Length: 539
Picture 1 (tube, rainbow, N blue to C red):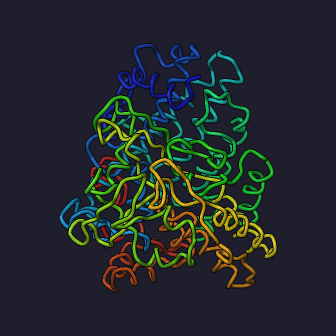
Picture 2: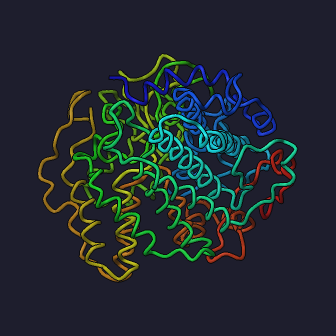
Picture 3: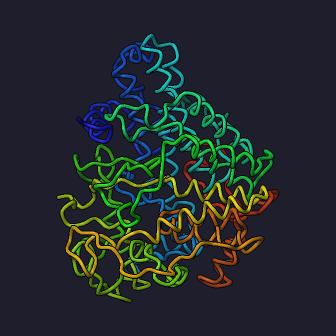
């Protein structure tokens, strides 16, 4: 049976010809909506309604039409490289804009931020079309509710991807004509989060659980995904701008609901989590779906350049996103997760010998193993990989729940949750096709006695253990920067990674008047001018 990943790829191409293919806000907001029918008659057909929602998924998966930097497919540029987990990589002169961002020297016309902004607002605009015109449709009520839930989820998801980078945003609840741009005020960070929370709460009410979807729809947004991102939004507010009075109990309630749902569990082998054959597994809460079909950059491309950009230049790749020595040093001795997270010169990955030109084409001597695509799955067009991008998995939920439990005074529960994650890790195998085995095999470690013992700490040491576990369990998954920011550790980590000057650069871009001032990136200059909104601090 064809699953959602394949049906999405098959069915999205016609809608791409009808929808908003332009990369600029000025263009995509000035197009006729989805085809030649009127807005309302279009949604009287259930197939059309589903295509319209698929168009939102499409926008959040774009590689950005010739520009490296989409906020979803290349989230590592923010979550990994802005943190102490990774450096830009590749050659020194290759895509210097990433290095500028890494040192907080970003220009207001940087293509990375422009593509992120445009892609997410394209998704928001498409979601607004669905949310404006689908409610009056006479299609099946159960299907309609689900599609509306997906639209709410994807709009909230897109706004969340923006607020954590740019701060407060113009909030749009319906399709917006160009003439209205100057009338849209930039909302505060708190108002933006309230908008996101409302979308995700509505999605929770409307979306099915994962098990309630047919197999053909595996990969669509679920109630669990909406709860997970709502919990993440709560956590980020607590550590940055908590004007909305969010509490750790709010986080706890959402993560507890996911755990108690029985919909998810830890995948048995950490080494297999990031292989193509295990996509959308029992641990997966939300993934961006890709498939090798149309080719080239951006729409209507249906694969991703994410993998080739991070793979080894000497075999199949461009060599970006190099894990740091500091990240590698965070792992405990013989932690099976380390060789699943990074590889270096002389390693064998999926049966392929890796020769890394360090320092000529690599900054640290390491590459991201989680982004690796084994030879048998490499597409004919390198920019069109079928490998999904994991956006949320159950291990993250367990560690979020542990952190919430800690702050609520339940240390024993926090320890038990952290130890669940550690137990899975110590029972995992060597990476697929590692030095000791063939290209397709997983071989157990011998004698891991004493590796990753249970956490017994309490007090501040327990919180440090939770943060440590997040770093090694979720490393190179584009989350580290946001964890550092929300816990008030970012500026120190940046100075240690780079210099006092880099820290000073970031401090010029801090949002003041918040619980924990944090740096924000520049709003793309063309968008700031078109919308008539104030630029972020220091730009």
